[in-house]
Length: 91
Image 1: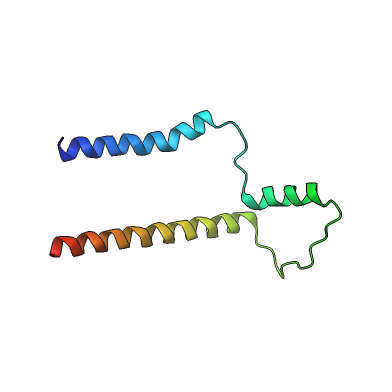
Image 2: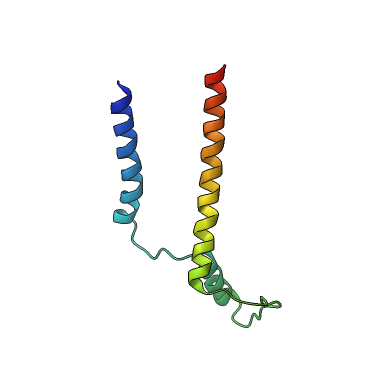
């Protein structure tokens, strides 16, 4: 199997991993915070938070920070993988 065919197979696998859940998973893609709020409301309807944040960011800013966090994490993982690959090639 050539490197080109391996790359094509890996690309197809990545596309399938991204597309298949969107096709076969029926449901709402909500966040964990919303699910936790709903669970707390069901378990203890009289619950009052003992702390509130000093300021609340707009939802777009929260999404941007979440995406930035994911991008930094992916960049770090890519750097480490590249560093190990370069280190193994140098030997």
